Image (cartoon, rainbow, N blue to C red; front, side, top):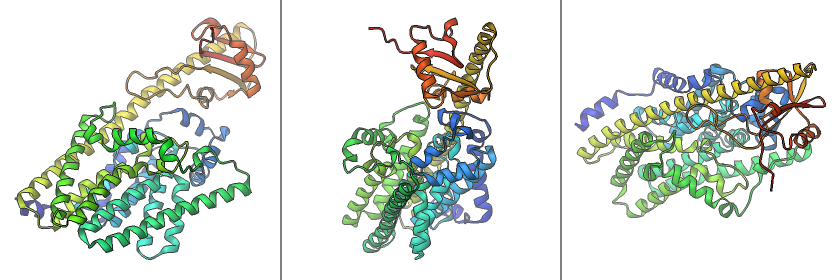
Amino acid sequence: MLSFYRNILSKITSSASGYAWLYLLVVIAYAYQAIIPTFNSDDIIQIQSISQDARTFLAQGRWGYFMVFEWLQDNNPGGLFYSAIGSMLLLWSSWFAARIIGFSHGAAIYSFMLASSISIYYGMLFDFSSTRVAYPLANLCALAGLYAIYKGRYGIGMAILVLAPALYPAAAQVAGVVLICAFIMSIITQNLSIAIKRFLIGTTALIISLILYFLITSISYRFIGIEPSSRMSISPFALIENAEIIKSLFLSHSLSFITLPETLYITLRWTLPLLGIFITFAITCMLLIWRRKADAVIVILLVILSLFAPFALAFAGSNTPFPPRSLIGLASLHAFWVAFVIDKICFNNINQHFAAVALICAGTFSTLFLFDSASQINKFAYDKYLATQADLLATNRIIGRIESTAAELERPLATPQSIAVIYEIPMASGPRGDAGTARFAPWSREWIFRIVDSRFIPANEAERLAAVNAAANRESWPSNESVFFIDDVAVVIINQQDTQP
């Protein structure tokens, strides 16, 4: 039975046509999300060049991200074209990761590249339309830089590595996950001393690149006059400050295959196959190394460490959010578990009955896992589309009220027309899913009106303060008094907190 499966897998070799098929699958997984425009609160303001919101990327230290989205893309997500480019960069970075880890078999390389590229975490990340080129490019810089370091090209490797956090800091976490996976692979494949040496070289290069990035960015910003935001801050007490966040991420995401927390997009259809993948990986790993007691202990510790690596920056960064979309390192970790089983069983002498079962399990569980990952990515995109339509239609109805109010007052709407929106209690948007609303955030509640009608611009701070004062004791939407004018500003009260004692 084992020889039958090995004969089938032996026919799978790395080739241009094989990579082309992988690329097609990745593009298909994210195509719907790219073609159907959806807007979260960040998208609302980022795609409008007049807002100059892309400059916030600079304050966050993501000057590479700024250059890609502001200069290359002109604040335009670019639909399927740029998404296809991002998919190519993502797949290319996965190829470098497979090489760093040391997979030899074509089937293992393909499975790693596919599983690390199609992930619900990337689906949540690419919901932010400005990320689809810059963030995969960050992964490519991080992993190509490490690959160059291992090939002895230290100068170019370090230069590329420094670019990665300037595009997306979480790319460093992806690199960290890959380094730990490579360490595990090296311990099992080679002797411990070689594995440690290789791991130290990669880890040292990654840490130095992060230090250089921080120094270069901080010094440059001081000379240019850019004020960095709190997202660039580092704290020696980050472990304490982020303790609850770390605990939540570990239980809800790193151990999702054990704790089985069912949410709208990470369900039992996703976590149960992942549990099967992890069990198959763990048993295969132990069968290969159980006779080497010291090495087995190190591998167990590394597996535990790998579960924290996807949010490693939480141990250093202060006041930095870690939503699921930042956990893209988990995609590489899950892919490693699958590819490791295939690679090792194809090349190592393991109990034949277990090896045959392990290959069947790896193939079955990974197929189910990838199917549900792609399915959830598209379901999430569909729910976001419905929420966006609800947001835009609601905004259009309010614009109709503004126009009718202006007509009753016999005052023409100015071009441009200042608007102040009072929206203090968030409300759900869309008929299904957990898509949220793009209308509530302070940075989008006025800018969404300009998406529908380019006459509208957000009121300045003085105008907004006057609007808030004038709105006191007025009823919320859809009351007749929820839309009114004060001086030259249109004021809309979606809802407001009850300030009565």
